[in-house]
Image 1 (cartoon, rainbow, N blue to C red):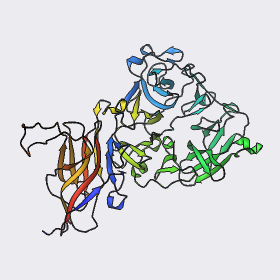
Image 2: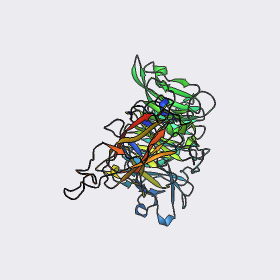
Image 3: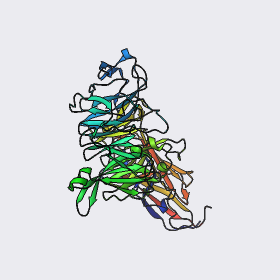
Image 4: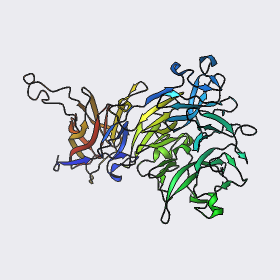
Amino acid sequence: MGTRKQQVIRFRPRGVSDTINGDNSPSGAMASLQNLIQDPATPNCFICRPANTSLFNFNSPAIWGKFLWGEANWGPAMGSSIGVVTVAAEVGNVIYGLVGVLTGAFAGKDVPFAFNTATEAFVPVSGVTVANCPTSQATSGAWVPPQMTLTGVDFIVTHVGFPGGVGAYFGWFDVTTPTAPAWHAGNTTTNALPSVPQGAGTFNNRTYFLCGNLAYYTDTLELNMTNSNQSLSVGDYTSVTCVAPLPVGTTSEGIIQGLILFKLNTTHLLTGDVTANTSGIGQPLTLNQLSSSVGTGAPRSAVSTPEGVRFMASDGARVINFFGSMSEPDGDLAVPFINAVVPSRVAAAYNTNTYRICVQNGDAVGSPYQDYWYNLLRRSWTGPHTFQYDLAVALGNQFILASNILPGQLWNSFVVQDYAGLGNTFVENGVQLSWTYETCPMTDLENIYANCSDRATIDLAVPAEGETYNFVAQNESATALGTGSIAATTGAAVWGSFVWDAADWGPSATGLTARTIPWNDTIVFNRLSVLGSGISSLGFKIGSLHLAYKRLNYFLN
């Protein structure tokens, strides 16, 4: 059997991609980086995602009676049990939001709460009654997600469960005194909103309420509309789904503030303020269409980031930059977003250089919920991570998550490891986390012949003594061609107590070191992928793969 001289492939993992042929994609395309995230110090190197930890559980007996609903202590005497946290936002280390109640006096209602993360205690919210709480929506299927926006001292909550008519149209927390927030529900004064709004946003200290295809704006720092014409018609008759703030760059005036208004299939940019229309001072109120064919049906995917507004469109993840230009769909990862089972249930947030988005992927077996993280520095994705959530809120240097499958709970989620804090645990909801490192199929090596390999190394840091990391060489159909395991050294051998070549002599290597994958057989392939897996731990790192190969003078097919 004739062969050529041995050569070496160096594969530098970059980020997750949809591609089924790594040769046709940017180098370093990975099929999976599950529960692995970018090492903040080293490009093309990955560490274990920290586990999400419980922030609090409404149904825990330890917190009964720590807050007020309807001016009375809530607790076992009311026979209440708590469902899903449907909306939340943070200001000043206090999380404000609504949570569904399943039984008791508030059964079937989403009820306001406030939780101080610094003191880990609830802040009593006054003014809450059954009558001024919205009716809960179903926890599955398409919905209109509640939205929150802060205008001055009013933390406004839109929710289609408000009755409208002669009742409330939206609610708000008055946070004039942060230690004693008050809940209210009602409508705008002087000129009332005509319908229960499906969303709201703050721009130039005014609240913009979304009612169908109209955006109604209040007076400055007020829930009042002095004039009956304080509204803008946004494109066609279809409804505006959500808004997101955007600093806008101009060549003549530098950075001005803008507000992106999304519909299902169009996108619009609002700039200026109505006062400039009459005074001639400042930017006049202007509404321009950015796209006539791209919008979003995922209101919670639209998030402001340092590079613009990121959102999920029907054809993938896009970004609107500071000049109002919309990007093409992300070239690495699109399939999970194109195949989102229920786009309105998608949840996303940005913090600490990371845009994260959780989507139910109808293209994957079993339609699982998948959490993907986009690192703005490395400009690449990791995932799918193994935690389902329906709400994500940025808080400090972390995220707060809520999940419909874990009702009544909020979770801490860290995007970097923290050796001294909560970001150093890898047991999540009672389950030990594990990681998966899988390359996309590579490489045909620009020849039509089969190739063979009997040795490979991978850069690893293995701090957990006694752990074993397993690797599988696969062809393009995911058929195993060979296996190998790397065991972390359990300690240095002692002089006089081992036989040469029968033990590792010397101290354990804990840095990023090239370690041999001892394949159990020679691997013969056209295209090859390497799958690695192991238990998540603090200090574990995984990086580049080196593969020695020879070209064979025959065909596999």
